[in-house]
Length: 294
Image (cartoon, rainbow, N blue to C red; front, side):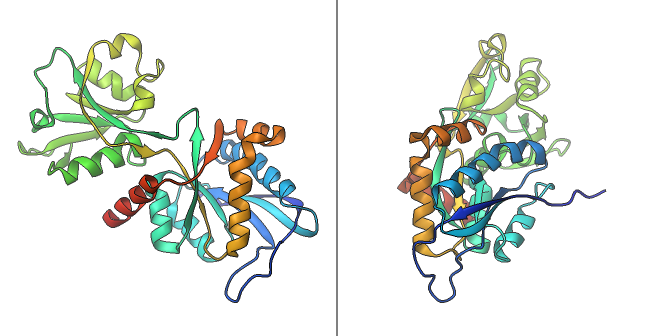
């Protein structure tokens, strides 16, 4: 049975500080969402933020604050809701954020600092006792990624290594000039596959590399890193371009100051978010670079 999109709502009051220009939308709703297959978890994370933003934006005009969760982890469903004017703010990783910017004209609003990280990189690693020293040594051998949707353990390293001229083919395809890949299904599986010799190399984010649950110390001591990607932002907040520009700016300022208020800090804690940060030129360039490849 297909999961249906789920929308959670609360009635809140929001002040609108300006008149919307022609062809711009001042929402009767302020809807936050993202693509996910874990509706309950994501609702618990996003709903407090929706409540907080609504309470901060004023009390003169009644607006319904909602959370939209597609239930199918589908970028296409998110794009549809944005284009229909039903979704205004999206919390997403760089590859989905770039897709939304490209296909439905969403605008990057702020960066997210979550679990003390604004950005990270990806590591390709092997066992220390192997003879592998460079990516060239992996030709004809196997590498383990996490899963096809992972930014740090698939999409970002694959993008960078492909640009460097390396080719990747699925496990079982014989090609001595390419690297065979498989999906391990979790970060711990990636590190375990390398530790026990099921694959020659694995890929983890710099955050997971030092996480003792995803890469136990006894494993990490046996590994060496042979390649690392450039840094990439962990998460963007994207905003619909149909919203009035002054309203977008108001949303941005509320997000940027959220960590300074007790209620804001409580709302952020549900998502392990430390704070929101202004966009950097580097972050904007990353989105452009990813969009060119999509």
